[in-house]
Length: 228
Image 1 (tube, rainbow, N blue to C red):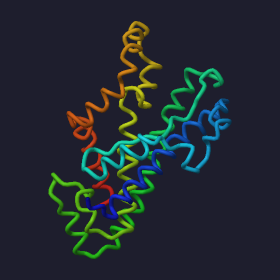
Image 2 (cartoon, rainbow, N blue to C red):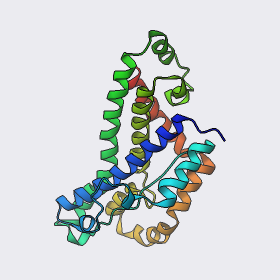
Image 3 (cartoon, rainbow, N blue to C red):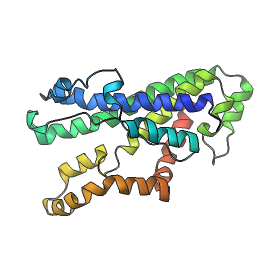
Image 4 (cartoon, one colour):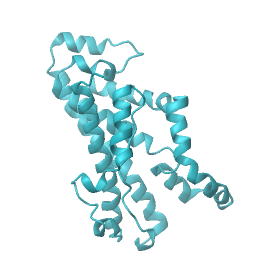
């Protein structure tokens, strides 16, 4: 099986994105009074405490090498809502911290990728500007300069990860936000559904492809920002 440089770049960008995503949850919780993540040694850039063998390595590697959709996660950072000063309101911000961090990182990556785009050969610029609507810049990365590839991959991974985590299906951040605001009469059914959330996500990602269909328009917007 051929493994090219783009695969390693994409995989590296994903690892960085998921780790910073998780750290941000712990940092915001600490701001609001919960030091659980700090005491657990999870407010560190050292990747080792954050890596989940399956979610951070095996599953993303399978996706990158086989062409199936690439998803991944780090070990969830522990948060104790009871230690927050205003648990109900502040858990919303703790949950949003991860996706927000990803969107900020995506903006930085997009700005750097645009910088490299403006310094490309005019022929490459023209080719990217004239890509058919069915294609993403992601589809032609292997033909582009390495600096652009790294920055674009980082922006793409963070946009996808941020949006993916807003889906209101357990164990994603969007489900925690949804749970805080759901009507009380829904809770019994929700608690029965919650243990099966990961299976539902896997089905949506790998069997139906609906997640990619929903998120692809946002990637087209990212491409339009970078290649302009």
